[in-house]
Image (cartoon, rainbow over all chains, first blue to last red; front, side, top):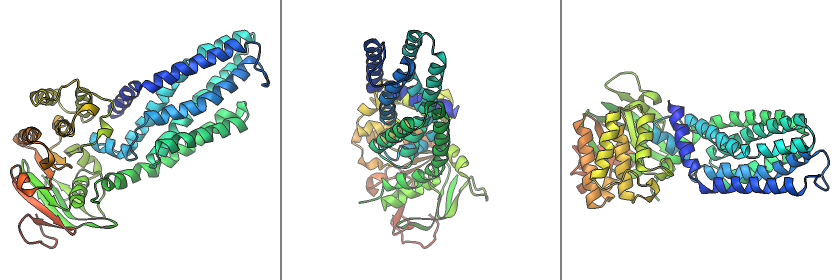
Length: 216
Length: 218
């Protein structure tokens, strides 16, 4: 029940952020335009339409997903500690709920691009295997972005740092790692990020809450 | 009801130094003096902070209470938009009520009280003025099933209508057998709320007006 209500709170707040819906619509429109304009293949990119479309999609969505994740999270550095105090629970529960709810929001945002992949598969006369790999990689990428942004904020970083750091890391990984290994590499990095949240769950409650109340 | 026993806490400088504070059932106690010391004590009693030394005991038990016991027994009232931003008043109260597994009747009473003091239940929390925000924070504590309400915000800074509402809220909570601990800056105004006051000075606690007592009981 605790997790249910924490998720309910986060998702209720997130769905009221107008920027989320604007970015989602803009991303879908832009990718639709790409597919419509370069249906025969994007110049300067190799591979079939699905692979080319996936490259454009990842290059666009990595900074966007990271930004949306950071934008949806609170602006205060001690947010997790304050929320845990108000809800009378441990910061770990709040951090965990935040990571899950960010994943849900990013998944909803990414779902709008799935029909475009189906169109791309039809254009290439059935590169279904490539599309399945892209969807798998995208799912792990969402996990990665949610985990890294949440961990950065739990460690007291600002939203800007969380956004830029996550986007830079994800862009480097997606550019350097071949597509068939990308999912596994991101999964390993996500697991390492989840381990890094443990000290963050203990620290912010102790420091951040009290610091805001110290006399000048 | 709740006792912080020989508690010490430092953050750069000592905030609490071997302090013992006992709060009885349905008692209302005010904390004055060093605001950081009062905030630290409230956060230790609520289980948010772990003291450097000493422990918190509940209901006279010899065993120190763990964070889980403290979370379920106390409600920490913090005026901060972080936990309520993006929600309406009724949504926020429902969130706190559900997450703390409180009876439905508590939520109904809190919503009725909010409307009586001029806080609309469909108002966005971010649009509330600071006075109404504190009232809603107090009501959130009221909706929980907690026995001890710890108010980490000076009630004496409220305007007159909000102060009356806060006082009514505190009276209702005490009527239900709950203990209330409030922090305040103006001891005169605080005196109208509380049964007794504790003053913090240089890490030590004393009954307000009395001499400082070393490791003494308040």
